Structure formats: C-alpha cells, structure tokens
Image 1 (tube, rainbow, N blue to C red):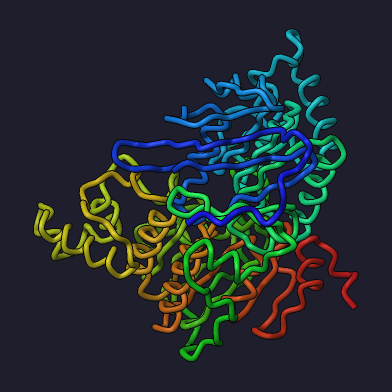
Image 2 (image 1 turned 90 degrees about the horizontal axis):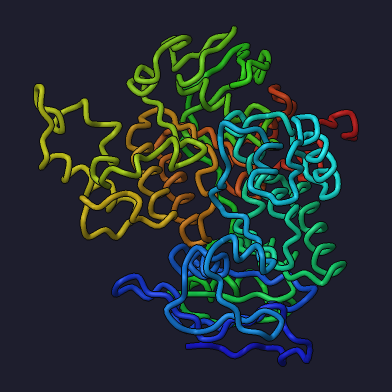
Length: 516
C-alpha cells in the first residue's frame, strides 16, 4: 500500500518528476509505478532492501535502462534519457556503488577521460594540476598520479565522486557514497552535499543503507519495497525504527552484541609485521596483532592506512618484508594461501565480486571453492556432483538464502545474497580464525543484520574474527576489542564498553597527542 507524502507539493517546479515509472525484466516487476519528485536545494534519500528497486530506478535516471511505461520530466518538461551520455547532457550525474574506473589509468586520467572540457593537448602535468584543483574545490582527498588498481576501495570511490561532481551535474545521484568513509569523512561529505544542494539549487539523490546518515543529511526520504514506493516523508518526521520497519516490515535489534562468552587462547598472531603495498611503498610497519578464539577484534581506520595489506598478509595473499605469523604453534610466515586455509583461516575479502566470488560460475561451484579438495566432494581424481549440490544446499540454508536453482550464475544473486553466500563459505572454512573485510558493505539493514548474526554465531562457537571495517557503528556494535590502524601501525586499543568515539576518531586521524 502506498502512503501519501506527509508534506504538500511544493509550488516550485521540481528539478525532476518521475510519474508512474515501471520497469520489468520478464515476469519480474523491478520498479512498479513509482512516483518521485526531486526539488531544488534538497537532499532526497532513497531507502530500501537489496532488490527493492533502488538501483533499477537510478539506472533508469542515468540512461542505463529505459522504462517500460511512465514519464520523467526535468524542469517541467518531459524528457527521454536514452543513454548515460544523454543523462549527463541533461545534468544528471551518478556515482555507482561499483565504480566504473579504468584500473590501469591514474586518478587524473580517469577524471578527464571522455570529458569534453579536457584540453586536447594536455600533458600529464596539466591533468594532475587540474585534478589537484578540482579535489581542493570539492574537498576530496585524491592522489592524481596513483593508478586505480593500486588504490583501496575508499580511494577509488573518492575518484568516482570527484569525476561526477566535476561534470557539473544539477541532479547528483550517490549510491552508498559513505560506505568506505570514517565518521569524520562522512560528516565532511554531508557538509559538501548540503552546500551543493542549497548553494546552487542542485538536487541530490542519496542512496544509503545507513539510517543515521539518512536522518542526518536528507530533507526527505522515500522508502521502496518490492519495487513499489511505500512512502515519502519529511526526514524530521522520521526515526531509525520507523524507517527500518518500513523497509523490511519488522523491527530490528539495534542493541550492541553481548560480550564473548567463549574467549580462549590466541589463535592468529602477527609479530613485527612489515609489508609493502602494490606500489612498493611500506604499508605495514613493525605491527603486532593478536586474535584469540571466541572474540571479534575490530580494526578501525581511514581507508588506505594498511587495512587491505593486513588482511592479505594474515591470509597468505601478500608476503611480509619482516616479522612472523603464527596460527597457534604453527608458523605460517611465507606460506602459500592454501596453507593458511588448511590451518583453519577463512577470508572475506574487500570486494566480494573481484576477489571473493566467481560471478560467471554457478552458485554451487562458488559454494565449494574452499572445500572441493576434501571428501566427500572429491573422490580420488574426480568431484562428486551430488556431493557438490548437497554441500551447497546446506551452506545456503545455513545463511538463509532462498535459491531455487543452485546451478544459476552468482551474478543472478542480489548483493545481500551474494555476501551471505561468501560469508557462509568462508565461515565454513574458518575452523579457527576468520579475517572479514567490510563484510556488510553495500547491504541493506536487513541483509547486514543477517551477516552480523552469522559472524556472532561463529564467534560464539570459538572462531576468532578479525573485523576490518570503516563503519564505526558496526565496529562498536560487534567488537570485543577495537584496535586503531594509522599509516600501517596500531595506534590504540580499547576493550568492549570502554570505547570513546572522539578518541577513536582522533587516533584514526593520526592525532594521538591530542588525547587527554
């Protein structure tokens, strides 16, 4: 049932009007007769679970898809958005959740690629200087000469945001823009968005699964469920409980996780670890870390301070320059990743699609990627199709994914279900320890809660979990201990219920001397 807007229609002509827009994929109705107005000078939040229709609706506005029916108007005139280029010409810019950057190009090259304002004979210095100027203008930290493949996901996202802003979009669509930002960085982004909206009468569409962000930054919020608009409300009339219930149809447990009751001895230990990043620059320096069985240790820090390198060192994916890694009494320094796996270490990587799952392969084949060497899946030189199906079915049932055909491609799964599949597979492999990097990034509140409950269940069974996340609220909720990483070193440690957000923020920003 559609709930009418709580506010009367503005007398000002909206920047954008969407009326009765519908998009079908075969028998699936992804967007069902959705209405939406974007007003000048407002930040309009779009909420909904994975599969609710948010991404499809945004792709219609960005020219990546065409509606089956309905109309889209700009400044009171109906328009046809036939392509992404046409969308940009009309002043609609979008930053996707999965960035569209050329990995072998630098940030400066990506920023200027395909831009009609790029000087024809510009050299590298010109591109770098222009990038520095634009980054300063929009207060975004971007290294112009760094290549995309060398960057963390957070750094890549800043390039994507800057590229879109530099085109001068009048309607700016941001899909999960703070997923990799610290609270301080998110606050700076919110200030920038407010300035963009109010100062120049732009309209900003802000897609987020973080309810506190929506309440903090938006003027109005529209909730989608199963492709339909549930309600559009003034944000001042909302609270997190109301929004969560509208999104998923039930109340969420927002209480912090209870402390571990299964705390045991150290299982994964790093001593004096130093390692380099993909550019050959030191990323970890003489770092010590200890993970005990039955605890979650959260790693807090701004993107690009060694988190990815730490996760890869502790799972055998990156060599160390110096230091030692132990699983119990077994030294794993210099071992291959498969030896880390055999020692009982699972790994949820930073990007579920590029590093965690093989999207072109089936769901059942992805489910057994960590177990195909062992019986009953492997029988001599051959794999058992029946055992593969059985193992995959047990795994997807354990993490509560509703799948009819295990032989379907992973790319058919929603982001939430893909992350549950990856999480379940790695926890099944993690008999002793799990290194989890951004395990709920990009998930709606319902899917994120499900993943967190799976992590807590693993912790309570005795698995030690290293949780690397830039979502400070998630770290505060789940962690038994929090350590702070800055420029490849651990700069602080806190036990559960002793966290101080201001102190954490200072340490994450590299200012321990300011802590009183």
